[in-house]
Amino acid sequence: MGKTQVTEKDRPVLERLESIVKDAGHAGIGTTALSKASIIPSERIRSLFRNYFSQVGKKADASSKSGIPADIWVYKPTGEDSKAA
Image (cartoon, rainbow, N blue to C red):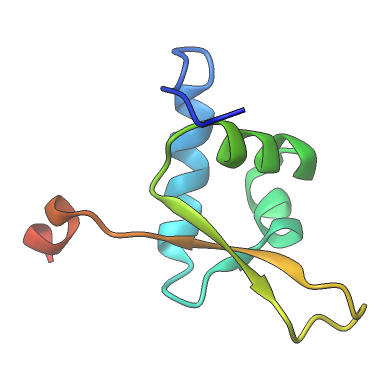
């Protein structure tokens, strides 16, 4: 399934998550930390970022202690963001 436009129901949640990721800086934030900061379950976070167009991208954290690369969410600035800086 490809990414789609955000539904009105999910828009406030996705915007809240994007804001937290943006505030985390360019190093990004892991799913668990993002879940704690937003009080949104990890699976819901993954689903929102996977299913909707967003300014947040995923990269793998190869230094994960469990040996399984963890998801790190990173904010992707837009042209508007660079103008505001």
